[in-house]
Image 1 (cartoon, helix red, strand yellow):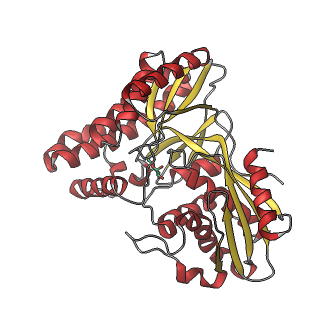
Image 2: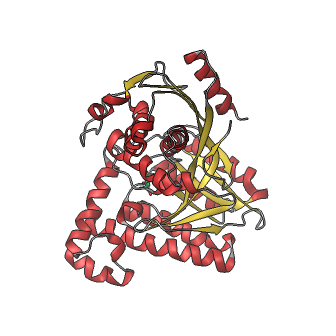
Image 3: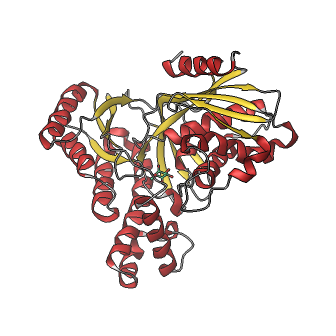
Length: 393
Ligand code: GLA
């Protein structure tokens, strides 16, 4: 078992003096391509990573929910019947409980209606080896692990897509982060050596085999260790710009705009809104082109699409940072097949698709560049596409 598994069980035992009824885990994710397209009803192509969040959970005789985590000093307790007083968190405010606790408690709140009379009090102990604030969806991993555990213990019997929706409700309404559904879907539906092609309007998914090992390729995560939060600031502002663009174009969502419509779009809006729109419209096309290219020619052929995606986020959507740009540039000049920032931006991580043998040299080059620029040392590690949630004990 992993260190996070042992840490969660250990924390549970210290908290309760008992052993848990079960241990569940769910992964973080890397997004291969398709950034900020999810809340525009568009397409994304993420995969789940080996790093997981673990929830050790036991039923209680009363109706109290107590959550503890290795990254917080104090457990948080709420009566099941008080959850409706705690959530939803009004837009633009912070949760009434410590923010980390709003993820698992938000899941309990969102799942409680489906559980009806079967909902019981619970002790929940959480540990994780998904880096927090790195753009690798540590939050979706907490939601996925908690939702899977509660679904089992409360006997709600929901499918993976419904549990992903529960996670998103927790994130949007309990935590108050206006995110899309990509991260929860990637965590809940991950498959080894494959990416998940998701239509964020219908929530239809296709498993797209990646064949990284056969192609001799590795995916290197370059975590800049510049952390971000999506409940505030830039993320919310980008989302508003997309909604403004769609309204000016008279469509329900930017998903309904084709690359050929961009000339008309440019005449209808200011330059900043137009560039936000152009990123989403071209990114949706790039996701579809990436899926077609993977199927026809394999992962070595998608490099240019990754590079174009990064340029669009840097220049049109303006969510990259000097650290992310330096990581991507250095990866490309050190032999990567492709590279781009991944996740919501304003910090977090970039990925490089690189020949397995070239990883050490590329990693050295990125570290040297960060030192030369005076940046905080990056955290570099390989990830392989991995499976979704599971019961570990
Ligand atoms: C964050 C959000 C996702 C998605 C990405 C950007 O990870 O949680 O819903 O919008 O940013 O693609």
